[in-house]
Length: 228
Length: 326
Image: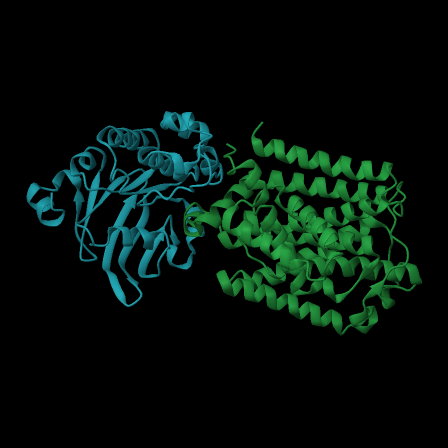
């Protein structure tokens, strides 16, 4: 069953148009990689889905029209976002970051701490004092605490040490196998994406230019569209 | 126990013991001064919910202080003159404090709901200006309301009643005020650590990110504004009872400014910040007010020093940076 469906979505930052026609479908439990070079509209697409910027076209989530909803209502429908740059609540502790986002469902503080044991060790520590990797884990945990049906990871491994990136990818793999959660993942590391994603959607200049099983993304195509 | 918790405990002990000692030494004037400080502290605790926890710089909190004061004044006036509050319903006034407090808190909360719903559409300097404008509207309304004294204000000849307490005895009235203040501090403390309080703190830091986890930052701030107003309204009722007098001055921007200034001096967002700030304010008013009517120049210098060198206020200066409380 289709969970998220975008058709001919356009969006602008003031007078500057960033999306010219994005088409994207995600089914329940599916992992989709959103690919494209820098500046092609990946993060803008995420912001449009999360209703953080005005957009036009058609966006449906679980049969509801996203276009009519403010940002917090879209999140309440079940869209969890791990934003680029983590954006944890810096003055709150790890536990407080999790508690303030909590909504009823299978994901609670204990489940998040099982996924990321480091967060249990840092429970009483301010988010601002965590390392980049720990902040990323906290950002994922906070999004999971909202018990989303779709989790969006925007550059979740960017700027992290290789060992931390492995931990994040292992957690993403566990999320895929252990729950019916759908994932929309933006990342530059194609190798890891291919290991977890079912399909890929490629953007170029604000338009969807390729969609298909990620296994069919040939080296030619990935060099042409993604640059790797 | 953290250093701030130790400081807080010391402040509570001082609040309870010092006026008691003054009473035992027959210094009832100092008990009344302490009562004034405790009532102003209560108003500051209210403002601190909006300002410290919600980041809402309201220059209109005198509206809620004044509404609380006039709630007390109007109810007590009708009770003492044996005239109905609302003629057609024959609804009487009352001089029972708990009823007056309830009316004061609810009236202030309702006003805050209206003012907040309009003013929270804006942020920054516009929010400050709108709250200030509402304050002035209420001030001029009270000035031109002859039924309840207009610019002369309204005197209440006998302090209101509280079951089982002689409210005319300064130390007993102080006991009531301090009990209400401690309850408000407990509420503020619990609120800051509740999921609501944490979400409010997050909304203060990154509103867009709060929306991304399904919380409406506007609604969080509105609820904080309403709770804050209810506490400040309650303080207004007690302030009017302390002075047995209400006047439009309670609504003035000067009152809003004073409450904000002593919250800043004590420590914005710190639990005991408003209490310490109010104590310093009343003490300086007493000690320097007798020397010069321009005593607030010295208060201004203190504010300047605090803002420049002690961002956590006096509490921050003594207890250091606020600790995480996970």
